Length: 398
Image (cartoon, rainbow, N blue to C red; front, side, top):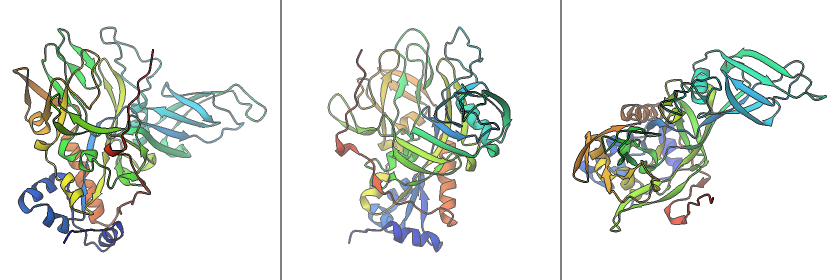
């Protein structure tokens, strides 16, 4: 008889301390040993994790009013500009915004040493941050300037809101040209001197529930060391299949999440300001999602191992294609994690931009929260679009 569980049943088991929780890595081994049917009946929740650069991240900050009041027209935090077209004393600091006085290295354009992601890390580390704001002066907001030091605890509301996180599957990036190039996947050596990837494979949250059977609006997650929620699908959410030139299906491709959480709960260990040579500033984000094992279909997807999950090999020296196709072939995460792959009969060393050990730590932390009864599953009020919805990516013209 097919196993069918509900969120209510699983949450009741969590509250009673009886839920069986395993990491996605552990599930892979269990299913190989026992089979999907038995593991579905035994396991209640599978935890996942990823820790890598996530550029489309940032925080809404509400500073509180000055005396006399000011309508903040321009805001800088440690000399990094923040967007203020929201309300009088509210701003959004983006992870990729860069400090105005940060010197550029002319040999590597885009080498900023400090940006919005670093500001966010400093805030969650409870360091003092210099707030400077200017206004144009009105009857109800007469003040025109303020400069002061603040900490995260001085800010009324601090909300991490990341429009695009947890990319389902990244490219395996190589460089076919004769010169070194600098990308968001790191430095790529000339003539296929190296290959970089950035997905945690068998721990990757959106590769474990690729059809979005359990992930949607209201899903409770590990975010930045605290508790967060899925707010919507992410920007550039184009769930589809990786397809080889011969039509072979290599699994799932380009889904993303928009996520939100209380910045004051979070940790500088899991929100890390990052600067990438030749690319610019970003933030490395820790994110993990619990997947309830409601039925065998969900268990089967969640049990996919690194040898069953593939990334497209893409040349970043030209206008690289999207995640859904590759004329250079596909490579499994087991091969990528082995330290070398073969492309066009050449053996290439591989390296991750994301951290698998830290992804493993996130999955283990989330597992312990659930086992202790400190973290209940959030049942989505609406599931996210999946490959069946036929979403098409549009491109700018001009």
